[in-house]
Each structure stands twice: as structure tokens, then as C-alpha cells.
Image 1 (tube, rainbow, N blue to C red):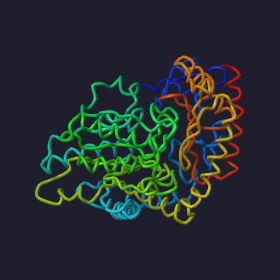
Image 2: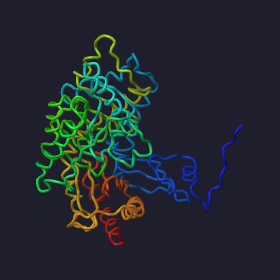
Image 3: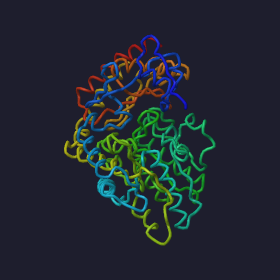
Image 4: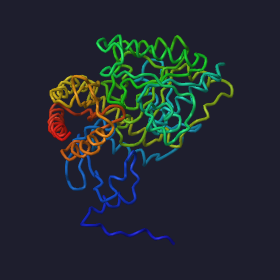
Length: 465
């Protein structure tokens, strides 16, 4: 028999934090931070827009638990929906069978998605949805007589998930190197970071046209007969919230139509109210061929994701022996579907889309107050999704070196912001940024609270550089 290792906490250390340090493999975490006894933050409770740690300290959840907790923490309606469904049917797969909640949720999502996106393939999360979309694109063209169309175009610095296919589509080299070789056929084009536009830096619309046309150039370079899909987030996450320039998404749609290439909107983050609509592509007025989504579908109360597909892409699977040989045990989970439906009901009853649209300008203008600080170069984003880029010199837009960025973000900002009562993301996938995506129930008083914390901590950061 193997016994569980016993340990004695040192210096009265928190037993939970010590157990986490010894046994829990945290995701995307540099564990050397905790090697010599640094306290692992342990979050034990959430209510509304706040979370509490095991020492009773309160923090504003400025990232919605990783862009996820749309309707806030501690919503009894969502917990109750999960409990009731678990008592009725705790689990059953949708492999050749259906159950009521998956059917109802698929119909609801189809009604909220852009027109003609009526077929819903459920997954457990966003990365799985992206993986599913690439596989579908390949098979769709194979069974419609274009088997050589398998390549994908995505954008520099973009993040699309961790499965091997989704990671290939991801445009962050450092995230990919440890796992190479990856799935072949994924190619990158420039993103829509207007703050660092290499051309047309004084004309956002012209820059957007240029950025979109890079997709057409990439398709021509790879060969139109070999490219299956373009993957993009309506507002790109990594790099610090790059919104689409005017006309950009429309031009990408034109390019995809011209070359018979599928347009895939990865709305893992931007769906379910983050940009003020159930799907950001609705708000931007452009219809993709596929939407991938997750996170906010259940407000994070249980894992749930989906790929929502245009009718024409499903049509070949209605005939003969054509089968999409792909699926997940947990896809369309009855408890997850029940929570998603309750979450969508909650969003509708509280008119959360109208609230975000009414409040988004206040969020932006409050964050833009920080532009008076010498370290703040740019504030950008949309809806309740913003990035604050930090610079060494505002006039020249000079960024920090790798060593300086390490010292600024990991050596100071991440801990200082958390200690000041703000959970957010200080990120250097690209140039150094602070990302904010508060719960959709946040109001002006919360924006003011965030601005005050950021002002204090960023002022300290500049003084120690």
C-alpha cells in the first residue's frame, strides 16, 4: 500500500496554500515562483463582482475568472439549475442519441447566432471548438470535391487554444515551441494592432483594409486550392484587445467568399455579452461560416463550448455515409446545457446586453483617464473587454525589453495589482499590457474602483523602473 505523503507546514503557513504548492499543477503557471514557500493565492468564495481568498481578503474580479463569469459569482439560479438537472439526468452522451437540454440549448443558440448558422456541435470548451472547426473545414472540402483545401490562415499573436490543431492556429511562438512539431498547414498574417500599425498609422480604415488584404495575399501565396479557412477573433485577445478597424471584417468576408474559404469567428471570449451582444459578429454586422464559443455560455459555472455552423456546411452530412467522426464524452452534457439555458434566461431577464451597451462608454472613458500617466501608451478594446499597453516612452511608443518586461510584469505588477485588490491579467504575449474584462453586471462605481487601483499601482511601477 502506498501512503499519502505527510508534511508539516513551515512557519505557520496556510495548509491549503502549502498543499497547493506541493501537489497542484496549476495551468500556465511558473511554479518556481512558489518553490521557496511563496504563498499560493487560494480563492475560496465569490459573490457578485468580487472574490475572496482564504485569508478573507476581497478582490474585484477584473477578468471575470478568465473572461468567463459574465453574470457574476454566487448566482443561485445557476447553481439550482445544475442541481435540478443532475437529479433528473446527470449525464448521457449525444453520440447518436439526444436529450432534452442539449436539444433546447442548440435551438436557443441557433436563434441567437447570425442567420443561417443553425447547427450546433457541442464541446467542453473553446479549444475543443476550434479543433472541431478545423476538422470540419477539412472534411467539408474533402467530401465536396476539394480534398486539397486543408490549410488555415490566422493572425499573429492570436490565441486559439491548446489542443494540437488549435495550438497550430495560435500565433504565439513561445506557446508552441515546447510542443512542436504541430499540425501542418497553419499560416499567420498581421493582426489589427493599430497602435503599432506598420503602415497607414494615421488612417485606421486604410490600415484595416491593408491588414485584411494580407489575408488575400497569404491565400494567393499558399494557393487558393489549398486554403480551407480563416480563423479570427472579432476582438483579438492576446496582445491586448485589438478591435477590428472599420471595414476590416467586411473585407475579410469578401476575401473568403472570393476564394471559397470558410470564415471562422473564434468567439470563445467575445460571445455572450462581452462585446454587448450574444455574439460579437452580430454587433459588427458580419456573418461568418462558423462560430466557436465557450466560457460565458454558462458564466463559467460548468464547462461548456460549441461550434455553431452554417446550414450549407452541414448539408453534405445529411446524405449517404458521410459522418463527422469526431466528438467528446462531455459535449452537450445535460447539466452544462441546463446551466447554459438558465444563464441565457438570466441574461435576458436582466437585459444584460442593453446594460453593457449603455455602460461601455463609461468603462472606456474611465480607463482612458489613465492616459495621463507616463507609463500608459494605449487604451483599446470594445464592450467590457479592454487592454492597457505600457510603454517606456509615450512619444516614440518605445516598448520594454524582455528583461524589463519580466521585471515589470512578473516582478512587480501582477502581485502589486492583486495585493491592491484587483484580479486582472498583466500579460506580455506581445507588448506589455494589462487586460480587463469585468463581469457584465459591473457598473460605473466598479470602473472607478478599478481605475483608482490601476492609477496607484502604475504610478508605483513607473517610479521603480
